[in-house]
Amino acid sequence: MFYLSSFLIFVYFKIARVHKKEEKMNPLMMMQHLVVLAAAIMSFFYGFTHFMWYFVLLLSFIYFIVAALLITTVQLGVFIDGKPQFGISQVYKYLPLLTLIIVLLSVKMWI
Image (tube, rainbow, N blue to C red; front, side):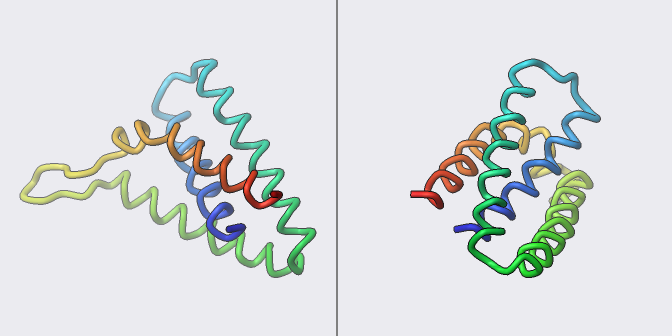
């Protein structure tokens, strides 16, 4: 559960970084970012207390690279017959769902 949660945290913050550059920031998004930040702190505290610190850092680095490549791929676009099938604007619509999943996984780790 920690591994999935940490990967989704890196994906979320990569999407949030792209969203900040492309869109105007509103207070609701800032609150959402703070909720995910709190969940990330909880998750990584769990990881550092239950796993070897160097293992957590190594996996975090790998997840950071994979999340960056994943979001860059979506930014470039997935085209079929010249029409975009999945773009970054569609990813923004699923950001609240991703927030919910991250928070639930972080809470479930501690229960």
